[in-house]
Length: 114
View 1 (tube, helix red, strand yellow):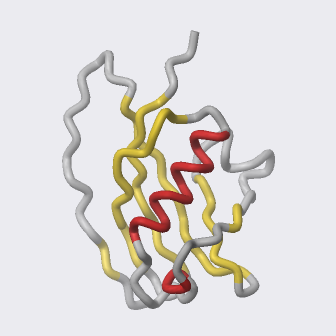
View 2: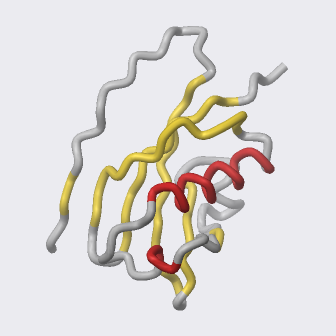
């Protein structure tokens, strides 16, 4: 298999930081650009929830091509904020690229849980 692995940069969060990370998979399913969150609760009840994203540009379609980071960032941030997971998304970094999918590490400012 042909894959490119990108080293994840170190992130030094303080113990009281609300900054967290999660992994997201980007894939085109049945011709639809989609993402999957690898951790609950956005991963779905059976850990098989794929969320269609509608990027502003059409450059997100094939996985083999470069994904517009601003479109992907905006889509992930919108999903996480409307589901009360995050105040905002700080960055979306590519971690692994394969022919069929791309893994991203998402850093976000989590909502504080009371």
